[in-house]
Amino acid sequence: MNETASLVFILVGISFDLFGCIGLIRLPDVYNRLQASTKCVTLGTCGILFGVFLRLGFSAGGVKALICIVFVLLTAPVAAHALAKGAHKYGVKLWERSVCDKYTEDKK
Image 1 (cartoon, rainbow, N blue to C red):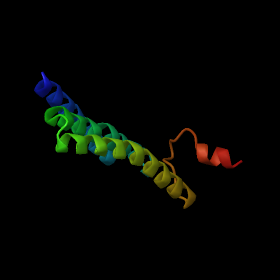
Image 2: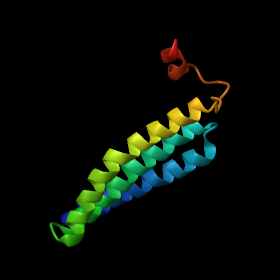
Image 3: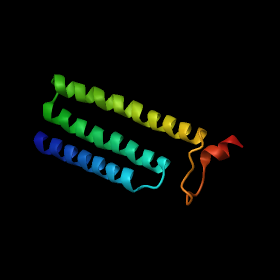
Image 4: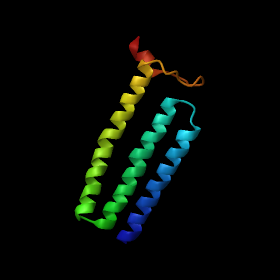
């Protein structure tokens, strides 16, 4: 049962990583690409690491996988937010068909 569950989590994680990579290629601007890559890292990598944890259990490798999950969950969204805010601050334009710009609205 553990092997099946771990395989499912690893495959779901790989599929999220694959869709995130496709999003990096297909999406029109830096902000959309950043959203795709953050989802890819957070959901895909954490899914793979959780599958590794299920496979290894509470061994040294399994505990390291859990620690990596916590680290990724704490750092990836914060880093993406900092990159997006920095890009907006330095004038990187949104896609011309973007509906709203919350950073500009908040400055008013």
